Image 1: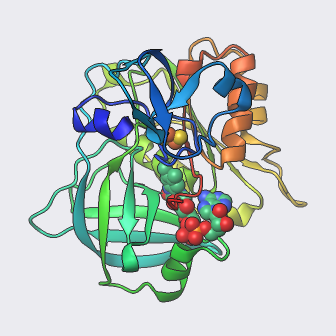
Image 2: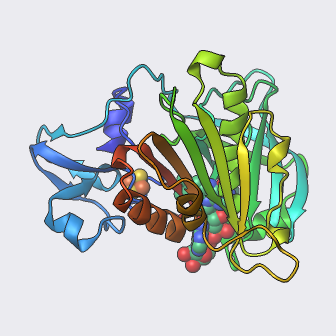
Length: 312
Ligand SMILES: Cc1cc2nc3c(=O)[nH]c(=O)nc-3n(C[C@H](O)[C@H](O)[C@H](O)COP(=O)(O)OP(=O)(O)OC[C@H]3O[C@@H](n4cnc5c(N)ncnc54)[C@H](O)[C@@H]3O)c2cc1C
Ligand code: FES
């Protein structure tokens, strides 16, 4: 259903496209559908209440869906392009910055926050968020974390070299800024969930003043100081940055615990707040539950869960 809608130019909320993250959750207001894969991203209660995942289902009749109107946001159709590795750089013990280069005659338009699928040898396909706001220079930046025993991790961290030829498909996902004028914009990130946040911070920089949010705060969670692999203050857009460690050692005087707890302690009033959360599924689930209970409207919690992107 999601693919059919996108092909017809109707943009439905989505992220993983594999039934795992729950971003494409909706209710049918008419018609019928059948699941093609297990809807892992739905809880038992949600299944019983009639929620479905559009990325996991096929319509068996005309259907009516309850979806958010993305308004005037133009969503660029995904395309498949060849690309080469321009550079590989270790940003931390288990994080690599990969710059991909597009062919001179190709362009990739996208919104900061979106991701691409990288297609490697033998058709191995994995999703990675774009960490730069635009590919104006024909370059795309990815932040890639090593997953132990992971097929694509093995390639990136063991075999990849400059000038390797790959393919990409994108842009994908709806994790991009909506109308945030006059609102307090909060980014919650864990690990390489910082990649799309970096792109969005760069994007805010190029917005005209009347289109900007009232304030921007970034909470970046990691285990140890060495996992905070990038200098968040180096991006121009004015923002308040709070690094948060879950396993802080002696000598750490900053925030400790989980990003959502630190957000609640410092900004308890969420009535004019929109939250963009990106990174581990565990953080996103727990943050959503906590913030919705505290009064954040569900439509103002947007997320991109870095769930396993292998197609099963
Ligand atoms: C929308 C989206 C955007 C993403 N963006 C990024 C990004 O910017 N940077 C980044 O580093 N990763 C990102 N990911 C995760 C990435 O796509 C891969 O899933 C991940 O890198 C593992 O791939 P692999 O081939 O190395 O491991 P696989 O061979 O796919 O898996 C190996 C084992 O690890 C488990 N596993 C796989 N992925 C994860 C995971 N994310 N967390 C925990 N366990 C896992 C699998 O279940 C399996 O047991 C994103 C995922 C999604 C869905
Ligand atoms: S569950 Fe459908 S997009 Fe993730």
